Image 1: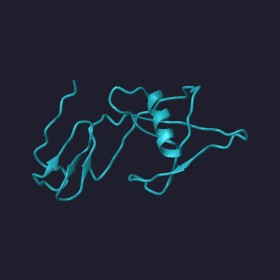
Image 2: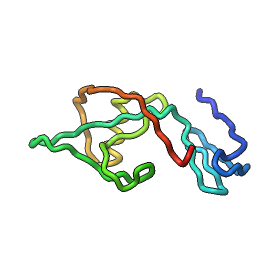
Image 3: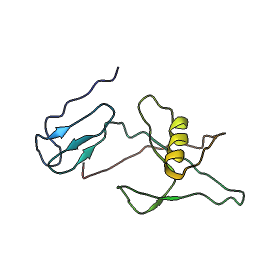
Image 4: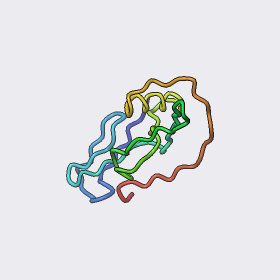
Length: 115
């Protein structure tokens, strides 16, 4: 069972219109700010073709919207990094991947929305 933490005020504008649903981001109806409840655990994947070219995608959302990046994203609750990259690649580029090989891990500082 996952706890829902109540936040009475929006951390950006201070409004009392901060709403949350299970496994969904908090959303401020006043300023539009979204706050995701996670520990910023994310996974990315290098996908190489027969000529060893790396697949990149264009980021659809902030931060860094419009820039190139590796397919990947945040882990959902109770999801492994491997499950996350398989899901993210399917969602972002429409490919089914398998036979993953671990490369490395790094600390992640994820600044979003000024918070």
